[in-house]
Length: 395
Image (cartoon, rainbow, N blue to C red; front, side, top):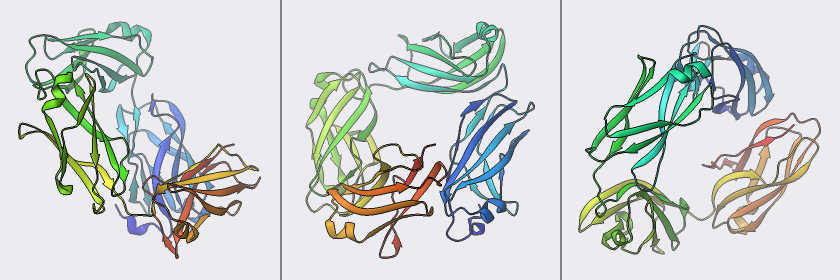
């Protein structure tokens, strides 16, 4: 990517779409979000879908933080995920991190596993497709092993078909998939889709993921962890030990919640350094699960993200919240909150509590509905918020 071609003081953040899955011969809106957009920048860029018979039309500057356009998917467009690129002087400077999908009639774009139940023996999958009722009646899904039972559920045509799968007795550890047929014709194969693993917690339990209920913490905090998996039993928790190696803490205080969920509490030392931390789960000194990034220790006066307290439209006033950790009055007084849009005024930034800054926001009647990026600075230096600082003004 030739990011050096992007003019100074202009930032491109993301692309998003009015429709995430479409058929050929469809036109829909999409937006580019960022900061510092101007008419000259709008005229400078082109958007390349990088796909057959897909083009962009009618790009227009909506706000200093939003450029809107139409994505025109022609009749010859092929089934695929599309990640649009932004070009300057015919050189790519940005690629959308999230795609939209095109699916031709009678084809399949993807099959996704969307849920596994707490027993670990059954789940749900979703087929991204483009079928009418007559084609759906010809659809047949076959697993790659006879020990995996599949049942289709009522579809949401044309684009979504979901199904239920059940792992039957006799299946061995390994990766298995699904094959989609229209009649006798193989249409799509997703292999692997399901990973059948041997139990590693007790006789039937398996750990799939560990997450923190709050990802950001301060020294001295109590960190609450959720262990997700399947097949857990109350007796399993007594054999587990959870460690945060870099902090020198561990616990075997694990609480059984359900066959798919365990809870863990860890006390962060008061002298814990700022950083990102992972965990290790062991049974009798044998490592069952490791994850490098689970929670973070942040410094005082850390800012996370911005949100409106209620939806606002041009001509209205309200409040905006900046969420953070361990905020002090002096720090809040040193912040400046601004927008590129002159008709969007932010005043009276103040500390509501140790994790929330509140500011008044007023929107003039001449402000166009759309997305706006708030600029948070301190002593002239920008403060980056990992949760983002874009707000939306409604029509």
